[in-house]
Length: 212
Image (cartoon, rainbow, N blue to C red; front, side):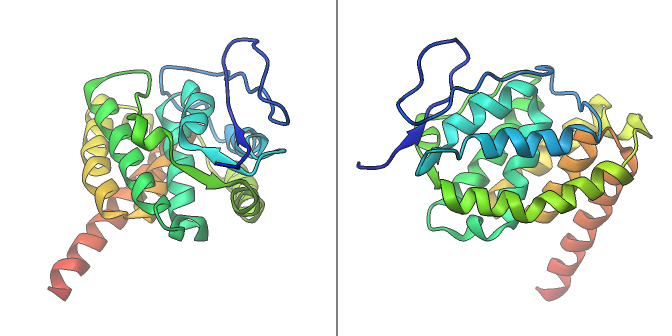
């Protein structure tokens, strides 16, 4: 196709010329590692854009998804609310990715299985890198202000199941902001943020009903 893609691998095999080899690390169980993980997550995502013209969804999943559901959900949600989510074909693929994450969470699967037609979708590397640069200050601020608290909301099976159902529905409708709030809370193990996500979701539903 004439584009240079980054291909992420978990084994020490040679990467395609001009593209880095990414070796996912971290907790594969999907539990949030805490607020300190947010800037590092952006670093790993930005590493996929180096020396490549486009980045496949499959590469993002194989690199970020190896750390669990929460980091990948955060990446998908951030991309949904950034301008890159408006690129033709990208918004729909992100919505499907969020729905897939929700389905895997609901079934209790630790890994992320992505259909080939989504895995082959790609993002412009330069626009992805630009978006990451835009969101970095917010990530640094969140790292300082989020705390591990109320884990019965951010990590309990019941709460995560409810969020999974929301992801399946909201992923299709591309409600990016509440998804991002849920992702922040789960990743940081901050139940207060997850609760804020529930409040925001209810407010959006009520507003939608009011408009109708």
